[in-house]
Image 1 (cartoon, helix red, strand yellow):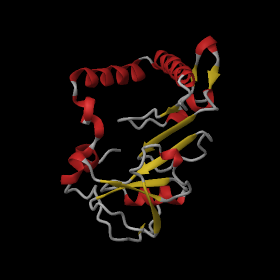
Image 2 (cartoon, helix red, strand yellow):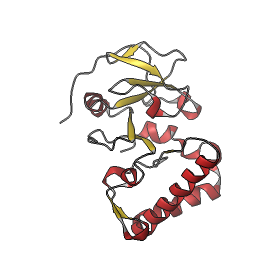
Image 3 (tube, one colour):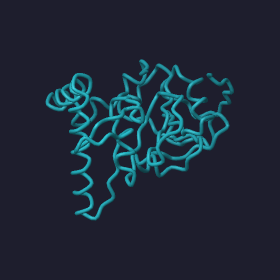
Image 4 (spheres, one colour):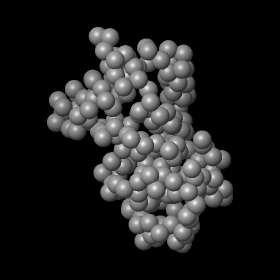
Length: 205
């Protein structure tokens, strides 16, 4: 569901992501997810377990973001884990740990309590973004100017640049303001928004 503006500003090639080995690793993982789902989920479970153990050893709090440059609806991905035990999804498998993601799927409801979603506004999904707000999902908006407006679409704007840990944001349908960075600074598609306030009331069924 990515848009032209989203694609142009995507973090896929940001930082180490532009390295061939990183790109190939992402391709390999994507292929494994679709061609060997059971094996992929077992490996993911194993890696999350190892990550949690390492974080605990370092006296840090482990947090998992399953989607980086993907938008898989993880709450709908059941799997058989280690020992043959069936799990409704990965969040249910690790109920005491926090998961979070960005998404462009606006109808996601009844999420696991330990899974926080933030909808991403693009240049072509205003209706769906407003529906996400109605569903009490926060919406991330990239603004061109360095100063965020106090409100956008009649909703309070919260500064989202302090941290990427979106589960720490106030929840319930607010706007998460992000400053245009990298390629997004030169956006001409409408992906990057101006700071003047707007009201958009159409709701998508």
